[in-house]
Structure formats: structure tokens, C-alpha cells
Length: 366
Image (cartoon, rainbow, N blue to C red):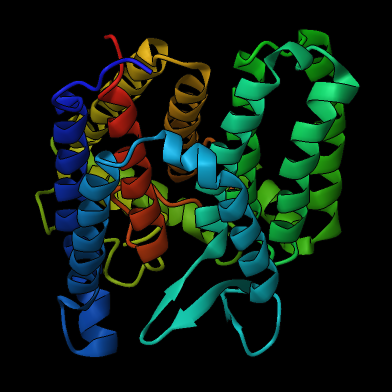
């Protein structure tokens, strides 16, 4: 391994902290009305998000100084622990159910979502497998099947919760990692066809998923039911115009858009800060993606490259899905917007992942 650089990628640090700051402001703005009504404290969600952010930033700077090869050494243990937690979530009395999904484990007054941490553990483990078996990846039986077998086993357990959104992000991230490692395109064509068939089967197996698809195609067919969230999201984005209604001036957060501080926070941001504000946030994510790809290309070894590309792909997929859902371009999936949406496990995981990426950047030649 080459000598460590004295400092990590400074631009990546600034981009992350800037997005995190915007997120904290928007969580308060989006949740103040609901928090006052439900908890008689307009800062309820903002204070908790600030706590999660503080823990996450501390973890990010700590992990930034941990040799990224450590994750290679402990990746097997990490993925075993995450599999154990995924199974534990399904056990009544251990797992907590919210909005029809049993995805959380209670820890005191807070809760953790094991599927979020499985994403990072899977990236670390798959990066190790791909770096050690790159010559075999062109073989369907020796390379592709073992790697995808583990990924889809985790996906299957996550779907028992069920949590299609998180599972989709994990699978999409891993497929990109396998593709850039040199897997044959023809294998992905066949897997793509199988994947489409499987996705259709998953949608047809649950009536609420069918409603999400139909509401995506025509949300006004059921404006008070399955199409409600998309319609209210568009009602928020539309009036925002070019410059927005002004910070704190959203109308949709007054009990029209359900829990606007989570999956649909970008809609409130676009309503209050307009097209300019929304475009600025997307630009920041674009710059984040650029820095991540640059770090991956400059990593001194294959493990560092695969680890970096996995992390930045995970962030990019979540951003594309979340913004796509909020703007009505994709069906509702329940994916948070990285660094902006309210959520302890998601925010902490993302900041930890950026910490790993920053450590890779300390060795990167770019």
C-alpha cells in the first residue's frame, strides 16, 4: 500500500457537511408543525436529528482515520452480525413495526434499522470478494453466482420485513460493483430479464405495491388513497416556482403531506426554496458523486476502488430514487434522501460510509 496522504479529500468533507447543514435546517422547517401538534415541541425532530448528526459526524471523522483495509479484515464478521440482526428483526418482541414494515430494533428511546447497516457491510464484503476473485468474475458459476447469491439472500430476508426500497438500493449498488469489476455484459442481460420478472412478481404479490404502481401512472385515479402522497408532493413543488415561497413558508407541511421530514423532504425544500434551491442541492450531490468516482479511480488497490465505488453508488442510487419519487417520476418506495431526510440509522450509516470513503481518499493518487 502506498504512503498515506496527510489530509483526506477536503472538498468531500465540505460537501458532506454542507448537505448535512441544509438537512438539519429543512428537518426543522418541515417537521415543526407536526412536532408541535404531536409532541408540543416544534424542535422535537430537529433535536433528535441534530443528535444523530453529531454521532454520525464523530463516527465519520473517527472512521476517516481507520485504515480502510480494516474493513476487509472484519467484513466477514460484520456481514454475519448484520444477517443475525436482519433475522432478529423478524422475531416478535424484538422487531418493531412501523407503517406495515418490521424493520427496526428498539434501543432505549431510539431504534436502529439493521437493513441500513447491511448495505455498508455488503459493500465491504463484496469489495473483498471481487478484489480477490476478479479473474473469476467473468465466469457465471465461479464469479457471478457466489457474489449475487449472497446479495439476494440478504435481499430475501429484507423483503420479509418487507422493505423493498432498502433492498433495491442494496441490490442496485452491488450490481454496479460487480459490473465495473469486469463481469460479462451478456450475463447481466439474462439477469436483467430475470430481475424484471422477479420485480413484477414482487409487485403482484402485494396489493399495496400494485396500488403504488397504478398511483404512479395516474395518481388522480385515487387522489385520497394510493395517489395522495404523490399529488401532495407535486402540490408542494409546483407553487415553489423559481425562488420558492421562502424558508419556513411551506403550506404542504400543514398536515397535507404526511410526515414531510422523511421521504418527501425534497418536496418541502423545493416548495420553500424553489427550483434554484432544489437544483443547488442536486448540484451538491453531483459534486459528491464526482469526488467519489475520482477517489475510486485513484485508489491504490482493487479493494479500495471497489469499496469507494460501492459507497458512492449507494448514495447516488438513493438520491435518484428519492428525487424520482418526490417528482412523480418513480413509484413510492420509502427511500430517504441522504443527509437531508430525518432518520437516525440512515443518517448515521451515510456519515460512516463517507468516513470510509474519506480514508480511501487519503491513499488516492488523485
